Length: 188
Image (cartoon, rainbow, N blue to C red):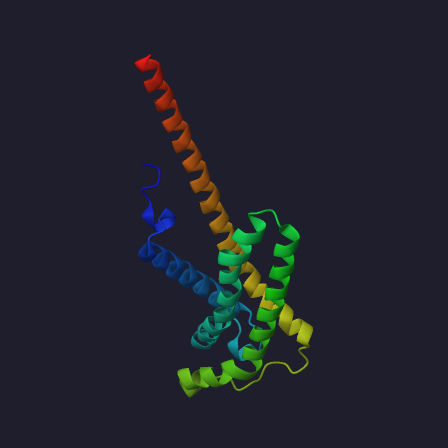
């Protein structure tokens, strides 16, 4: 059968969980290495100089992206975009994106640093702070930049799976219809 790859196409809970954990783990590693290569901070954490810090911070930065990805995947996409209610879907996505961007900015400025100090040994905590001239808009755009890649990747995969399964279902119906017609002709 075409659908033998259960990890990709199964709707069984265990496969879905493994699929999601695998995606977010790969995304975290990618995002963490990208963040480590050129982070939004001082030279002490740039260019892979402090990988434990940037990977841990990247994990904290991905958590709000889950708040963006899953409502889009399981609410906005099926109820608006797949039903061709594009304006409502776009407006809800934009509002959600703004809210999650604000949450990410708040976490980055007020919550993540104490968590990082708790989780990591002191030698990994950089001595410099983030630049103080960062505006709200710059912070919001930086927060949304990461969210855009995660969400577009998950939505793209979800749509590919949706269309593939729909196409597979249509082929099955055509096959069953042809078999029914053949049986009817044989019976006549």
